[in-house]
Length: 163
Image (tube, rainbow, N blue to C red; front, side):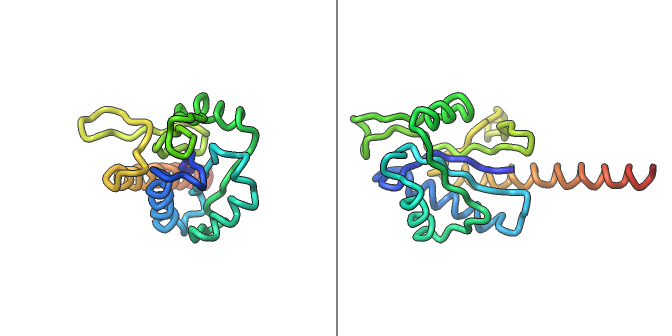
């Protein structure tokens, strides 16, 4: 189970708030071996592995829990849109030169985007990483998902023991 986001280290707008939300998730689920965080840079030319490593250290990232990724720009943008259904692109009109989503995406152990239910009862596939209220809802949904897996594991172990 992991949460993914798209950011860049020199972002002057939403990224600092998003990274604080990811730090909250790291702190809340740090003891869970079956939970991780994944951050993709949308500025791979600037955000080299060394820059990402220094950025992570400044944030206080637990490298066992939270991974920062870079790669070819086109691949990152394709993964954002086709894999996570979020925006990531260059945009000369956007502050910092990149347009990217503020969303955090919850992924289950099978690689599927997991949805929660919003306050109106509608399914929601993403959580606003700049909203404390939505991050609180994400935390609740992560707890439910992890509990589902633990329950399924216990049931499978019980069946094996009965056989």
